[in-house]
Length: 207
Image (cartoon, rainbow, N blue to C red; front, side, top):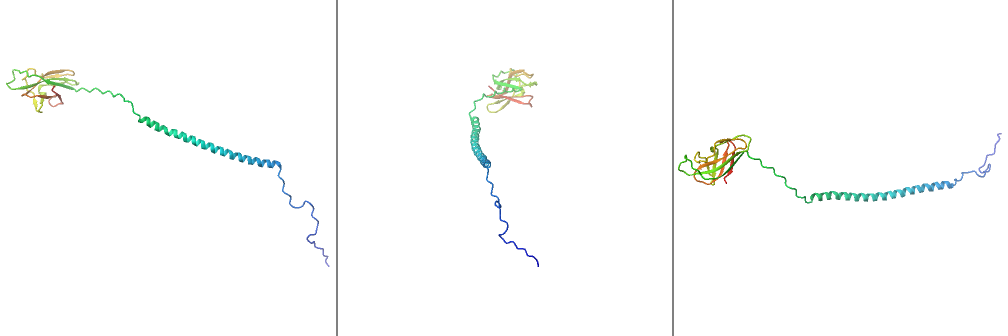
């Protein structure tokens, strides 16, 4: 027969010794408590610094706004300065008028009858012509016409006035005077000189 051993029943066995089981949680030391409080203080310090920075930043914005406002008034002041009435500047000096190459003057004069004049009526004008140009000009009684107050043009009558203008050539600065005579009695208004008959014309009023 096999030998049977007695089975262990629950609740039996060696008694549990004191101290067995899960260990109790360790108590915090005073140093740990101090470290925790220090961390909270650092966090609070950062929060305070952030609030101060936000306040300072807001003040800077207001200063910037004030600066911007001052800057915006500068263009307005410049514009107001531009629109201010300017002092009258002295007028620029006018350039002297350039002299015409040929200058002609004419004035009324009495008719001086020559031996070649017939018994008709004549009207004479005393003419002076001056060469202001660099080139020579030719003067001839036939180069002149007289226009009266009615607009009628009279050609020159040759050798009827004793003081008839000569046929000459004028160099620069030279001049010649003499009469130009038209047939009939009329009131002369203009005298026209044409250089060489086909050249440029110069008209002057009879004074």
